[in-house]
Length: 277
Image (cartoon, rainbow, N blue to C red; front, top):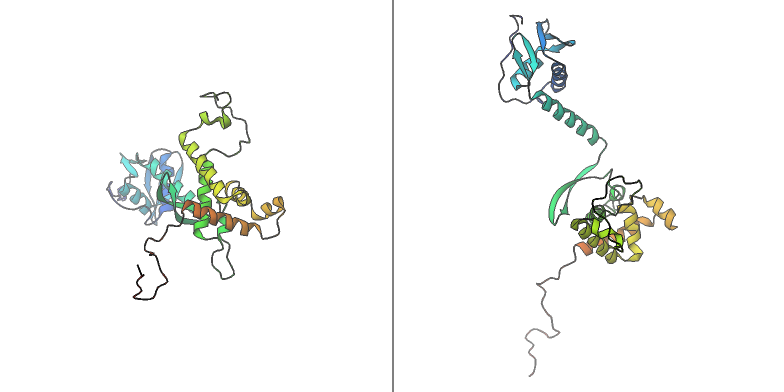
């Protein structure tokens, strides 16, 4: 290594996202091909010679050594043991950033395994995403948040209950045989799936046969409103009204109104009235 090259030794701390993260990723990919000899170059550029030969900013190499992503091996520079995990994290972050450009993510709270937990919902991917973005005449949301949450909860039970239609052959070995005469193969599914099916059945009963169909089509099978109207021969723009009514009824089923214990009985007597005994 040239005597004019003054690079720091490995230290702890630092944030690779502060500056030159892209250049740091390029450098680490180069070093992961194998240890490289370092040549001092002009104008802040350093040439690494190994399996391939490439120029990198001098400050980027100094940053890699400082963060412990690269280490000296005699007169050569090599990637450290943490370099691979750094590249994997960087690629995952880049992929997440790319996908975020095509998503409409909102944070909501849903009941998961009997407890309320925060979840991220991609409205661009959710079957209810297009409906949740609809506006009423006043510019407010056409579908109340409680109705959207009820539809997501219905889809969750539908999925957990393993009620999706199977469109391909299953080549998995049978771990248990279906008992003769058993309805729906219930002996072959877990208790959690059975509980989800029970909740789904209760939800269908709460909405009634007139409304449950449109809720299943949109929430569970991901059909668009126009497709539902064509299949059911409904008038235009009627499916969203039926769906709104169905999900509001479902929301009352999931969270029924509680009586106001503060209300007291009333009588028709005036102030100071006392009944004659």
